[in-house]
Amino acid sequence: MDAEAAKSIGAAIAMGVGAIGPGLGIGILASKAMESIGRNPEATAKVQTAMILAIAFTEAIAIYALVVALIIKFV
Amino acid sequence: MEISLAAETLFHIGSMPITNTLVMTLILSILIIATSFFLKNKIKLVPKGFQNIVESVLEALLNLVDSVTQDRKQSQKFFPLVATIFIFVILSNWIELVPGLGTIGIHEVVHGKTVLVPFLRSVSADLNFTLALALISFFSIQFFGIAAIGAAKYAGKFFVSPLHKPYFIGTFVGALELIGETAKIISFSFRLFGNIFAGEVLLIVMLNLVPYIVPLPFLFLELFVGFIQALVFAMLTLVFLKMATVEATH
Image: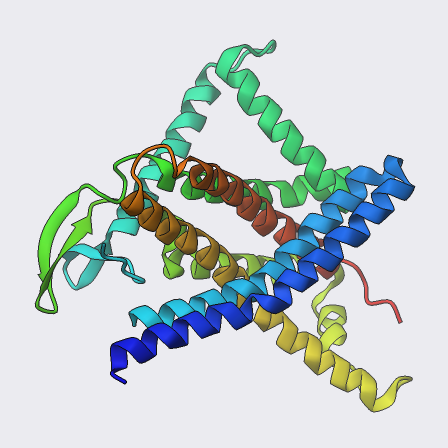
């Protein structure tokens, strides 16, 4: 197959596989945070702040995969 | 539909290329500085109107910084850096939603094809800007840490001698922490760049497919993502600053 087609497939696989891990990670994080808010509604602000921070860290991994896909496709 | 990963140069001053993101950065900085001068001259004890809005935003930011540092004096030390990062990044994230930003430009011939070089481009969609901000954060974390607990104790966090209690494991963990510090630079810059650049590409693609009404949820998503990324950058800098000024507990 020619280079353009291979680049497109490479970019697609990079992003697709790279989104599995962070997707699961964010789901687990958010579910534990919901649980703890449900048990203790007074601690909502603290739990929420920590949750947003942790979600940003896990989402960064998906962004790395996205950057690799963009580099494959456009550079 | 041309999507360019790097920022396009508009012209050269001497041998330094001026990119469209550099022009945008200058515009944003002039905007922020002019606003603060304007407010400073007309400051009143009982705030009204614009001064009220700015005061409420700054008070919310100060409370946010307080909630992490738990110490008013320390938050007053960290506040200028963290609040500037937040305000600058949120403005540069939201500026990409202004209509006409990436579309008004001139046609140039680059590598044999005619592409559109826009005059302005969102600042955070340029890896140079996010890398510069990440380096600023990294070096201020080191400086604040050394200023708070002294250079010897701060270096003692990373270079643990193998002759004391956890023996070689302590040295190994110290080396890992050192690598982790440098990984922060990469993670900061790529997180912001990836989010904003991907948002721009998403908007270009959606507006190309259906120009009316359908891109509305994506514009809202970009608004939300811009706010969250600015908040995350500022809060992560704050959290690392706090962790750097705490003595190593062993």
